[in-house]
Each structure stands twice: as structure tokens, then as C-alpha cells.
Length: 110
Image (cartoon, rainbow, N blue to C red; front, side, top):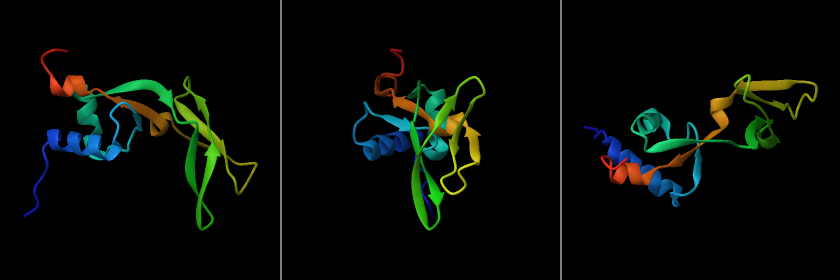
């Protein structure tokens, strides 16, 4: 029988994976629990975004620079394979979040 970890266990596991709770983490990196962490204010939006992303390219991956368009809520990059092609993706995919350990540790104090 599989044991479903509590949201507290999942937060501790996320902190352990990051190794430094002062570092920002990419949205989506925390998986299913991310929405719950945000709801409980254990994560906060940093209003910052990645500047480069790894994309599938041929048999591996390639790092590409992205252009952020906050007004449209999307980011774009030029395809490394077809240079005339511009790929557009939703901005939340490259958003960064910061851990709020104090809110997790002392929930009534915030």
C-alpha cells in the first residue's frame, strides 16, 4: 500500500531537493503540491522569470534565450532548428517562486 505524504512532508522534501531555501525555484518544478504551497503562502511569486530554457533539439537538448512578454502573459524563443520559427509558450512555465519558510514554520505569525 502506497503512503501519501502530507503537504508538510512534501514541503520538507522540496526544501531538501533545493538545498538552499533562499534560492528561487521554477514554477512547475514542485509538481502537484505547488498550488497548495502557494495557497498556504509557503511559496511566493518573485515576479522574476528564467532568461534561458532547455528545449528538445535533435537527439538532445539545447539552451535558448527567451523573450518575456508580461502584457501578453507569454514568452517566446527562436527555434534552433528552424530559425524563422518563433515558439510561443505561457509565461507561468518560466516563472520563479521563493520559499517562505517563516510562514510554514510559524503559520499564525504571518
